Length: 389
Length: 100
Image (cartoon, rainbow over all chains, first blue to last red; front, top):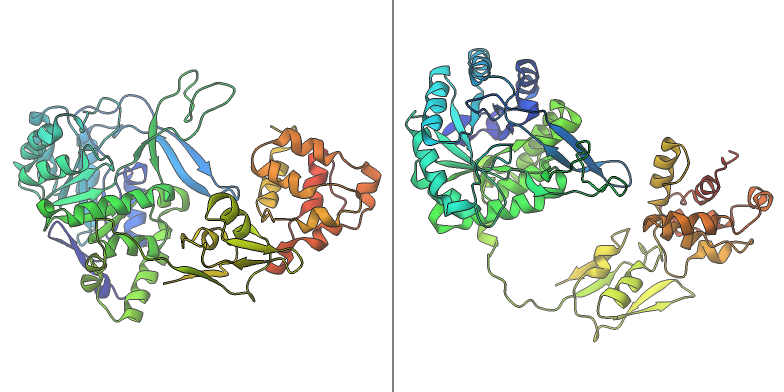
């Protein structure tokens, strides 16, 4: 593996590739983290630590598609179950063994004094970076969306006293994304990781009338992660990338990355690196190897460096919405298998611009009625319809 | 939920999720017994297992075992390589195993 082509930075710290293990249950045991780093991850953000070990135990439940693949994972999480001193001793050992990897701590605390204490302890343990978890949904954590970032600013300023590079972990929550990011930046954070889990209720149990993860007789809203939240993550990092008050911030994309193309999406929108959690929970840390190879191969094909690739989509993107030109569907009649789904969807959910030839089992376009929405192409099971600009 | 084995339910879900939910479905048009597999599969997709089970009982068991699987012969998905496994799903909805 030519690691040179994938070298990048996070908050100014050099890393050998853009793939980091996110603060999560995959990042709380020495052996599992060591295996992930050996498999190819460029670094780890350790499980979020508080002054006091977490009360209670985590619970996970999966939302699956009909083929059994996990689309999203609901988690009633908690912070690190051991003392922060135990966590930091693991981080210290990791740093001693994996000198070239990024070893980062994630912390959360209730009051600024505790943030300062934890950050100072991280500095003594020799960690490279502190991720301030300003989006933690764990039991007993502050409400970050309240008070428009004032609390975040106090906490980050306290953590900054330790002198380590600081990033902030953000939620895809329109009331907190910008206020918390801007306040954190003013207080000394040079990076941001987005997004944390989404507030969610994935489904309801019909008989027990509570939501999963089931907790006996009580249901509780949980945090949603996995491939289902990737579009929300991409939108959030795009908003951060293009916010004039946040220019120069080092961004790390998190949320639903399962393959190198997902990672590339975040990188194109300006992220200098990415973090994985749910993919590792599902497939193990070995999943990083095809991601490294896939991204490296793509950069070779494109003839670009990672530095050139990062943010290269931003000049082509606009944040406002303008009226769009009409385009028309072009069907490949050879590829069409005659299911009629385009006809049904256009008739009942579109402009009713398709006719149906029952004999030939083929759709026929009335171009004057078509509004160019692309619903026909979206529902076609064999991609036989392309939208022509 | 259907009163059948969890593993069978998982296989059934994978099978009926392959259905393309065709307009003017050829599977239903092809059935010599007058069954409506297309509606059965749509009900399963939309979670109405009760109606799916009722539709699955439209024909006699013996006739169903003896039929030539005309629905699967007509299935549009054959053009993508293989038909939806309609007959095994139909039999599973009746609590019977497919003889294959």
